[in-house]
Image (cartoon, rainbow, N blue to C red; front, side, top):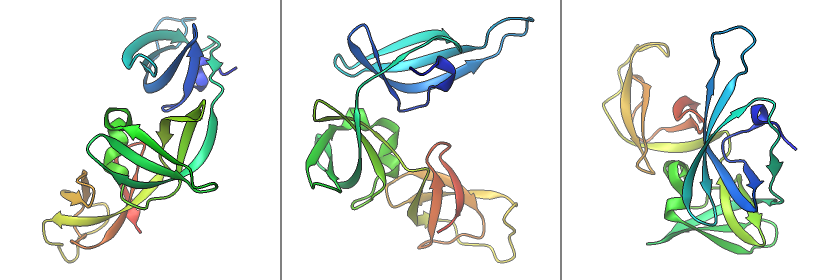
Length: 188
């Protein structure tokens, strides 16, 4: 049983017979002595598709949902679903567009390394790898002599995601993006 302090974005817990997917965690440290650190957690109720917010103390125990985790490959997106394939047994799963949420900008056809969470053989959520490699399709021309720590410029990536990149990068380059922060990490 994990504590509230150990929760991570994308985790699935079970509470009162409902499955809750962790969407966001806001940590608040009170200024008074002896006060507990508070965790304001935003969940999505997987069965009801509702947003649930709770404020927890770091020592609160939560019941982790009994989910199977498997490695997936992203296949394609259609009008209603993102489609994935289990890389071990080739089973295919679909996840509704609204359930993919912020991860959509990091998914390109054929991408591997995605961790899928299965509950009763249904895909209920995905966890992205730490970094993904994406191609820059549109940005201002590169500036020769620009250093890595200098100013940044916006760049549109092959998935439509817009990130800030160093000025020396040009169109056509493949870069790594940190999926937790959404920021440029390095050249691929």
